[in-house]
Length: 454
Ligand SMILES: Nc1nc2c(c(=O)[nH]1)N[C@H]1C(S)=C(S)[C@@H](COP(=O)(O)O)O[C@H]1N2
Ligand SMILES: [Mo]
Picture (cartoon, rainbow, N blue to C red):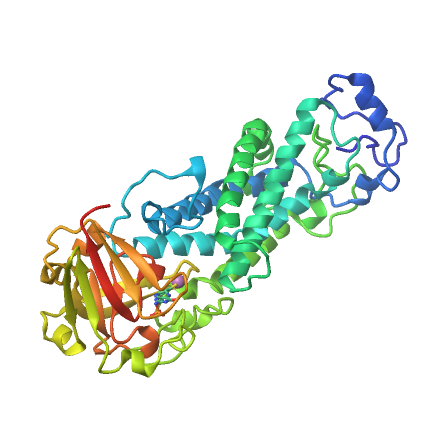
């Protein structure tokens, strides 16, 4: 929005072709335009890159238009996977933003691994694109007048929510996966509502800009533009939005190189991230993620979210006196580890997928949850409440849906990859269920309460 845009070298205010006139009250907006605050006059002229213009903004915008809704939707799926029905999704109460009460499936077993991996990895990969897009429009932040009509005031407010929303979501998400809770508010609450604010603003933004975006990408075929060298890189014609610099300097890079820089940074971030969702040697490439890495080698050398020590689990807790209590209504059965080992074993290859994005596929052996339910006379449990030995902490308990108890691969695991569980992986027994978010794969289980009501 450069009111004072003048053609290079000229000093007559030039109004680009279809620059919108002032809306109601026109005198008011004109007055505002005539009185820029100190320091604002002429600022757009200081942004000189000839790359800026509708085309570059539209290309970056289209990438985000494809990518960010995927990040949003996979984020919603994660909320759903946590089981809001049982009050164990965060934030607990989301008012009318409540999602439909559908059960999270147990098949395919890699479902949560993929939705959560996509959410985190794509969110990281899109950071350079978001920054590139913001760079392409940043002079508009300093344009004067800030608006020419009431409609434009509303539009700019939606931009504030759009830009603020995406920066907030990226910042809180990145800090969360680094376990850096620098902010004084609850991550889940802020990230959930922030996502909705961003998406609402995105819908408004797309509705307002779709026509121009389409025209802009059609104005220069991508293929052609990617062959233009730096020497032949010229500014686009002045546009009604004032994206094109009013006083452009010579190009220091071509548009192709600018896009290559953004794309290259995205690829680099992606390459340093995907390893946390892959097993084998790839895991070592996840340099950006503190817990995605392999803590050791051997059958139990896979990531640990919270160690036994950190959870306050002592050797006495898990020693020969450890018992598993099964409940169903008034009925109660107590088992020691030998009794569990004497039951029919079942082995399944299942992922642990953490909400922070890392996941790993391992081979678990234990007893089926449905066999445990039958032991205590709960043939058709509607849910199961699992409690850990761990005292306190949000993750010391979890509620499983009926399908998560019934699945033939739903286990109380006693061993992994052919060896006894280690203390850090949940010895003496832990939950592992297909497609269940890692957070509900409770370690150091003390009690399972099979419930027949909701
Ligand atoms: N009791 C208890 N169980 C727990 C947790 C915990 O903090 N306490 N963390 C959960 C989380 S967030 C994840 S991702 C998985 C990780 O399992 P792992 O440490 O064996 O890889 O354990 C889950 N089980
Ligand atoms: Mo987790």
